[in-house]
Length: 480
Image (cartoon, rainbow, N blue to C red; front, side, top):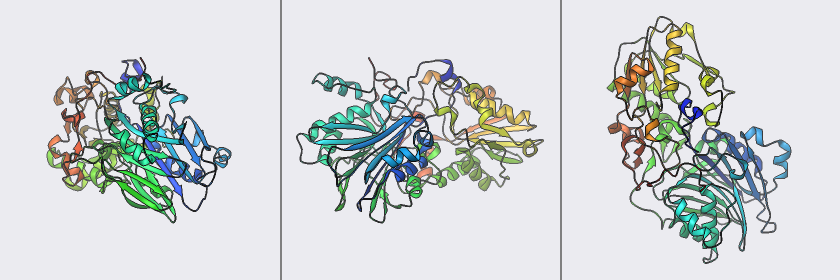
């Protein structure tokens, strides 16, 4: 995403994820386009700008790939007729939000490359921090780029390594040696489906199976959508290759240090997903419990800001004994309006998206749980809505620590000068949003959200980056 300090960026007060990926290989030869469609539908929360599907027939000619891509939601881009034309038993799909590269049709994924060894279809979730360096190296050897996204650089590297290696999966491993940053990849070759996860494991990726069909997906909820059974997570640094003989694994890229994105558990992932053996729902319940332990307050109701605040609010209620209530009606047809960039109507998007149940909050002291405060604009409006509806007190509790630093690994945390917590104390923020009290989750207790696991990245809260961050902000478009 281009982080220019314009009005739309100021008004938007939400964190965006980058993408969702999905891959499938039906060994019995059945068409897979409809399954990819449903898988992407289940991953729609990870990106609402664009989407795409590419399929191939493993029993047909090697160079034949059919694809359909476009701007918009999954149910807007694909029709029954377009899916019917996507004949093939192996395929990859993608939903996108642009943290890097312009928001246009040229940057939609999956990317399809035709090269000497055949074809590659690639879908990528994450962000490379050395993309400019890699792009320069490739450009000076004659590469011509059709997009402004780092995913094309990855595809080129794999294609080039394939000329020197005996298999696509080996080429993927060789390319990974040159990549720095976050990437979960799903790759389709003429006869194989390949999944790869960066050595730090920033972004999730898992494996599923349905009868004689294998699936790769960003989240386990996408497996449920196609009636596939969860097999396991792709491990950080692992390359998995799926062909007619089953699953083959290469762990040569693995390393001891793991840095899974903790914000996946707090906000990004669906609550019905399980990431690296941890239930997202249970993580959010735990966040609420910790908030109740840390910031108790006398109140009548605990309410959550839909959707990611709901489970944390329940956790706060469980721990405190204060009644949990539904205070907001969400317009489910709006979706995550903030993911759609350059909306001139963002100022009123909160009211379009949420409405307060006045009968629930009138005359009540309310504890309001939300997942984060970025710039403070949305939180201030929601607090005002509750008070206008008659709430006598609004105590805000946030199920993440304060955002203090930008993210370079596929999350659109803005530059620190746009983060309300960077230059303001908690008490100043409380005053700015109009709350009666304010409490954030402590950085020191984040590991409790994932069963005490310490292998996570909290750099946007702590500044402790697992990789040396780039000197220049590479989160805008990769155009010179």
